[in-house]
Amino acid sequence: MSSSRATWWQSAVVYQIYPRSFCDANGDGIGDLPGILARLDYLRHLGVDVLWLSPMFPSPQDDAGYDISNYTDVDPVFGSLADFDLLLAEVHRRGMKLVLDLVVNHTSDEHPWFEASRRGRHDPQRDWYWWRGPRAGMAAGAPGAEPTNWASAFSGSAWQFDEASGEYYLHLFSRKQPDLNWENPQVRSAVYRMMRWWLDRGVDGFRMDVINMISKDPRLPDGIVGSVGSSGFGDGSPFYICGPRIHEFLQEMYAQVFAGRDAQLLTVGEMPGVTVEQARLFTDPDRHEVDMVFQFEHVQIDHGIDKFHPTAFRLVDLKASFGRWQAGLAEVGWNSLYWNNHDQPRVVSRFGDDSDRYRVRSATLLGTVLHLHRGTPYVYQGEELGMTNGVFGSIADFRDIESLNYYAAALAGEGSGAPQPGDPLADETAGGTAVTAAGPGRQPDDSTVLAALRRMSRDNARTPMQWTAGPHAGFSSAEPWIGVNPNHRTVNAEAEYADPDSVYSHYRRLIALRHSHPVVARGSFTMLLPDHEQVYAFLRQLDAEQWLVLGNFSAADVAVPLPDAADWASAELLLGNYPTGEAIGSPPDAPAPARSAELWLRAWECRVYRRTAPPA
Ligand code: TEU
Ligand code: CA
Image (tube, rainbow, N blue to C red; front, side):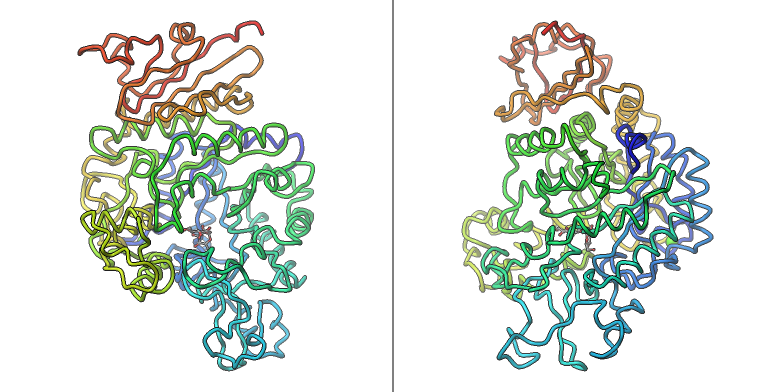
């Protein structure tokens, strides 16, 4: 976070751990801190530099820990502070770092701060949250009397009526996640005190949850109706995404928490809806706000009216987005690079091909293309194994509040759950006839909504880590809190660890490339063939060293129409994802058209070439 040493994280790779699903050491079916401790050598061997721990703080677990009731302790389900201190010491002893999840846009409604605030209108901590009376001219508690028409991210209104005080409190996420009022300086200093407490304990930084939502427009205007799916609610995001005081708050946080600390720290802000221009301001090191942000463009590229109305994925759209972010933060600021986290479906199932034939190829292709962009890569647990989306039979198999609320709202005909005309999922489940696509208000049959959840639910990321082919995938000795993917019999760490052609071994090679070749961390980025529907191609260059990264996002052979293809075809091949033994260019079967080209790629193939840049 400080000037000259700011670059350490430019050649680092971060590994995200979702404690509930990583490794269960005490046999209660829920992952825990001693389980993470038991797997540190696996992570060290993978080569990652920083571990990001999703929340392990005391929480009623309404939103799987992102609803915190005590910021300076560990939830007993995950262990104790002593377990945490031992884990931190062992992470550091292995030369890695550990960053925590900072969830301060909201607390749990069981946090003492909120319990005080809801005691009554005159409680000294009332103003620590957003309380408002009913909409003018409306009776408190009456439908539509909410102070604004904003939707919650988890379906329904963003306001909860409190009978006792006759007022409403704001919750952009679940009812049990009331938003903190950052306009109140006491709130801010309480948060900074807590952050310093963890840094003093040796933590190496923070991933900051929806941190660009902490500044709201205090006028709390209504949002435009009809842009939040068809829920009838208004889109309040223009009034809380990157709000009026966001830069002031982040600079104050830097001054109060990070300034003057000589530890090599990392901060990454999760920022739904952030633009390239805003990200340049947030990540400009001279502005002392955050080191990097998580932007959402590429993980919303297949969203229709909402994430549960997914549309077909188009490579040119993905390249357009990545190309803009690479160019936009080339001179100032810095990109994070991620396909997966605990909120996104598994990328190999989403943008790749998770069939047995192409799972390994497409998983290694996706990893290669992402990791060789300019920015700091994040690996989400199981991504390094090519784990796929889960298997969910009925709604009973889901656990995620966003999915369960969406299902309930959809079946009640509320919100945008109701299938829309031409909605691919409606067609898919109704055997192609759009009979169920009857528009808003009509009860969809649950198979339509279930199909949407199977594809996009966050639970796809939260199935237990697959350590072995054995019972419960070696995650636990007991029945896990959420179903294990049956493909753990073949897709597991034990099988992949020593297999040179596994996804795991390929990720090790990718991470080693970033550690050993400065061009990966610091080289310039140039997108090639932006309009090609199948090929992802780009150059990285540092001084005279030039790398070409190629990826075929399809199962069909493809020629790579580059002007200097012949030269590249004879350049040094640094990395590929086809068995090293199989020579390129000697096709076993009848030549396909593509194969006559100087440079062509097989199904889901990726290649990385290196040469000395030809004189300009
Ligand atoms: O996620 C914020 C966020 O943008 C997601 O909730 C997103 O809206 C949703 O997943 C898209 O479907 C952060 C955390 O990563 C998430 O797990 C929490 O649920 C949320 O904040 C509230 O803390
Ligand atoms: Ca456990």
